[in-house]
Structures are given as structure tokens and as C-alpha cells.
Image (cartoon, rainbow, N blue to C red; front, side):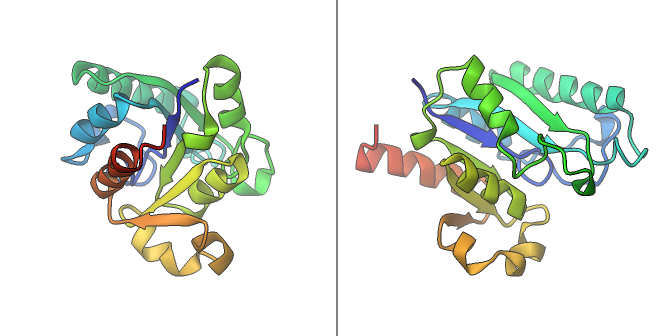
Length: 186
């Protein structure tokens, strides 16, 4: 069993530019590669992203998949292995089973990989990311990048008490690895 890091895409590992339909719109944060390399030493890495632009007709499924292919390629070129990129194409009003904060994709990952959720993290810049962490019994880290700072006030008190808030992926990575090495959690 190995713990995992479930990362949101936009506003977490790449800059949030709305509905990204082509690889030339992908812009990684300056610290993304270093953070993911450091995390990968102790965690399996996954990306889980809601992409409602597909159901809204703003994006085609093929565009999103091409962007994900590009992201995985660039990460691989930087010696980072993302196990899977999972995406929900639905709008929140569709009430589907795969949209965050539903645990559909984490359950799918658990079926295919030996994941220890007790020591796993979900990291993202939306309430749905940290609610996914709570729903799956992982640890939640809410980032202030992307939409995070704007929506911080929308996080209910009972959720806020069960998550950690970090400035960005770099500070989240530092916190995770400090906890891992100083506390000897595993």
C-alpha cells in the first residue's frame, strides 16, 4: 500500500485560464515540476479535474484529452509520472456520480492501485476538492492559487476545521514532506 496525492488541475498545477482547449494555453506554475518530483518519491500522483466546459459545449472531449496528453507528456519529460488523469465532463447540475466532491475517481484509483487513503491527500483550489478529501477520508489541502483566494470565504466552518489551507502547491508540498519526515507518519 502506498499513499497518493490527488491533484486538481487548473489553479493547482497549471494556471487557471478558464476552459483550456489547446496545449498552447497550458502554463505550469514555476514550482510545479519541483513539487511533483519531491512528492512522487513517497506518493502516487493522480489528477482529478472537473471539466464542465464539455457538457456546456464550450470544449470537446477530444480537446480536453489532448490537453491531458500534453500535460502528461511535459510532466514525463520532467521525470514525473502521473498515474492517471481523471476528468468529469458534466455540469454540476447534471448530478453525475463522477464530479468532485463525489469519490468516484478516488474509488476507481483504489481499485487499480494499492492506495492507502489514510495517508493520502487531495489538493486543490475549490471547495469541491477539500470536500472530496473529507468524503474519501483523505487529508484535504485547500490552495489560495487559482480560484482559492476568491472562494476562501465560501468554505463552511465545519469543512475549514478538517482541512489545511496553503498559499500554493509549493507550501503544500513543504508541509506534506515536513510532516512525513518529522513526525514519521509512515
